[in-house]
Each structure stands twice: as structure tokens, then as C-alpha cells.
Length: 471
Image (cartoon, rainbow, N blue to C red; front, side, top):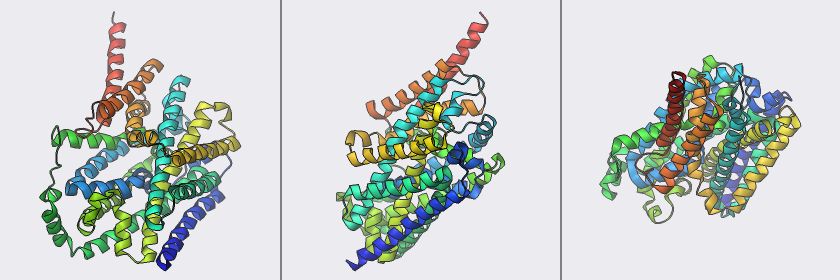
């Protein structure tokens, strides 16, 4: 009982820190919608980088990535490497232009940018906003649920308790300071995430007798665990890796991450933010993967339970109570840093893009945030399996539907409303069919065919237009 009290005190202390930083950020706010949604486009690159890292990695880092490495071994590195390459290419090729175009067109949301500036299309803006709300809203609910599972492991609390705690914390600081509060707290959460992962990894390696001993133990359990060739790839290694590279590039379709680039203080600072994010995200990803490998040796019985809970169980086994509280705070921070960003992006889509009459009302924007938070809370509490089955598809759906169109917009390529609508619909449809109907995602991630179909629709439309002009 005493141990749990110390864990709870440490955990609640970090929650208070996150909430306090978010609320304090309100001291810098200006009561305008641009400040609430983009922090007046004045965020320094250090904060941008830390925030983008925390938002992009989410609870999947502490839960899914650890469990994935636990199950398949060192070959999990290819997912991490492929994703990092794709993400880096997106920041290098798209994000600087995104910052420039959003400022030049005074676009406060991703959907507004997608709608165009010379002859803006309400159809494109509203459709992309609805896609954002549908998938990011469900995704945010899943983040709250992921955090609650860790509380269940450590304290035995019902899932609804953790879900409610997460929603209240996020709601408090988002309402106080908008995107600035989200970015500031993300930065603190990123440091906690990184520190907790590195700490647990160091302790786990020592407990396993060192790197060489752990490797020998993994080989003894199953030689495939130390083989860098991923097992059971239906189409071979190249399609597998290429699919994950394009999945990482799919960040160009994620509004909750794109707004970080839109809010940075200068387009010239995108390069620094990109490089810093790559370093920090690589450290945290490799640490999470390595923790999964250590857990396979130290907690072999999890194969019959739930490998995705390896991190909290390993923390309980190896760390003193106060540090277990730190690990729990790191996991919870990972979920909150993504949920807050997604809630704010949904709120922006609702109040700025779907109901533009409220676009310049500071009070209505905050009411939109409160409304979205309540809806996300309701989805998480409902715990509908059919809803959460779509969560892992959310990234792919957004990347395939919005990604190709955003690339065209920032590169200022001409596109009609009909073609843009066809690109969004066909990209999402292809990703869905690839993943849910054919079940080919294990061979090649569905973002690749999804984005290719959207690009193909645009290419055919351009060729047809050129052909018609010569008739």
C-alpha cells in the first residue's frame, strides 16, 4: 500500500506540473483566434521540435512499439527507421513551404489551407474538416483509453477513472491557453517521456546482465528475435520498408502535427526543428524498442498475457516507487501530448471551417474546444470496439486523404474542387480496401497505395485537361 501511495504522489505531481505549465502559458495569450489556434505564429523552434516529437509519438511509443519489439525482436528497428526517414523527408520537402503558404494566405487551419486561397472551395474545406474531426476525434479517445490502461495495471483503477483524469487535465490547459498551452506542455511531456524511457532502459540492461547477455538470452528464447530480417513478409523486405517510409511521410496529412510547423516563428527555423526532432525521436524510439527486447528476457510470461503492457510491468519489477511514478507519468504524458493536439485540431476544424460565422469569436472557439473534449470523453467512456478498431487506421486515412492534396497546395499547383474531392475520396477508399478488405498491410503499409491513388487521380486529371486543351 505504501508503495502505491508513493507512486500515486509522484504521478499526480507530474500531472500537476503539466496542468500548471499549460495554465501558466495563458499569461502570454492574446484573446484572438489566431493566437488560440496558432500562438500568433511565434513559437520558437526548440518548443516546436519537442512538441512535434511528443505529439507524433503518442501512447503508441510506450505501448504499441514496446509490445511490437517484444513480439518480433530486433527486426522492429526497420519500422522505426522507415518511419523516421519518411518523417524527415516530409519536414525537409513540405513543412517550410507549409509555414510560408499558411502565413501568406492567413490560413489558421489545415482545412482552410486545403480549400485554397485564390478561389477557395467550401466543399474542400468542409470535407477535409469533417475527415479531421472523425478520425482525430476517435484517435484522441484512444489516447485517453491507452493512458487509463496503465493506471489499471498499477493501481487497479477502473478504466473510466484514467479516462476522466486525462480529459480533465487536457481540457483545463487547452481552454486556458489554446495551442500555446498544448505546445508548452508537450515540451515538458517530451522531456519526461525521453527521460523515463532512457532511465528504464538503463536499469533493464543492468538487470539483464548487459547487452551481450541479453542478446544471448534472446537467441536462446528464439533465434528469430536477434535476426534483423523481419519474419513472414509476404512480398519481401523492400515493399515492407518502403511502405513504412511512406507511412512516416504521411505526417503531411496529420493536422495536429502540421499546425506545429504553421505556428513556428519563422520558416527559416524549420530545418533546426526538423533535425532536433529527428535526434530526440530516434533516441526515444530506439529506447522503447530496446525496452521491449529487455522485457522479452526479464518478463517471458507476458507472451501469454499482453506484451503491450510490458513497460508498466517492467517498471514495477525493476524500479523504486518514486521512479515507477515517473514512468507512469511518462506514459500518461505520451497520451496527453497527442490527445490535446488532436482535440484542438478538431475544435479548429469545427469552429473555423465548418461554422465560419464563429471563426473570429474567441469565446466560440473555446466553446468548440469544450464541446470536442466532451465528445472525445464520451467516445472513450463508451469503449465501443467497433470505434477503436478504426484507431489504428486513423493515421493512414488522414495521410491518404489529406496528404497528397496538402503537398499540391503548398507547392501551389492548380487543382479543381472536383479533382480535390476525388483525390480525398479515392485515397481513403484505397487505404481502407488495402487494410480491411485485402489485408495486405503486413506486406506493405496502406499509406503507400492510398497516397499513390490520390496522386494518380490528380495526374490523370492534369493529363486529361492538357489533352482537352489541344483538341
